[in-house]
Length: 376
Image: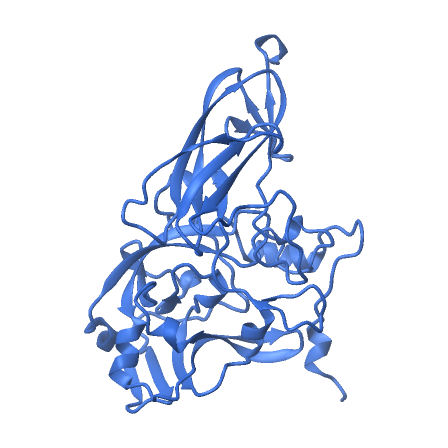
């Protein structure tokens, strides 16, 4: 008697000074995984290398299950759509870079205690599905519509609140064509894997990953702003009582493919002296990336990198490269992206209580060994 959900669900907190990663964060880190940075070389990320964040359990959807998407609320014609019904709509494939809103959280001080991402919570895929705007047009939106609430099949408890995973999009975003929101059933030309939302998920190009609801089972149109837990949790707050700014579009980021070869534990890279091609990817959901700069001295100086064209994929990352002549010694490499609206990456992380949108410059320690320093 007297037990509460809160007994199994801790409140949000910040790590104490010098507090290391705890068992709870380690358990999250073993369930979720980031992109191995060497996989940045792939234009399209293989599904098993694409980052994964699952808040609760991955729903078990056996093969042959009659999955149904319900569309209701402020619509003239409520719908119940099977996967076959959705396949009858026009299909669109869009290459999209997804990034978790908490990417970089573990690098903050004090550290918000949650999924302890460094910089690897990202991936790019070709997503195929039905434009959400077409499904909403079929249902017929009421003129009083404000938000489109997206409900997944994953269910759990967070901060003492039992819930289905739910997010919402403003009607103008849900019905827009730039970007065009997808109800996706395929990833890289194959059916969605279970961890990526099979059999149906949402893809919102340019927005952080928490908006891309997986295992989608219901769409509800409302006449007032949605205030569900997962919607209000993702705000930039420095103090708990602040309303905060909503987390929406992805801030610019460039990542470097670590050069040379790594030490197992420290991940310090070892390279040989001489010319070395540094390469990586850059993206921004706020505006197209217009430039990437590279530093080989911890951010003291910067050089312009060569940026590849978009190639018709506005919502996907772009390749960049730069030639560096390595000399014996220790170095710290990094790259920063700038987009068409002038947004660029900071050297000091933008702190907030949730650890969201932390797009600080990546730091890659490198040891360059002279021939006489090599051990055999």
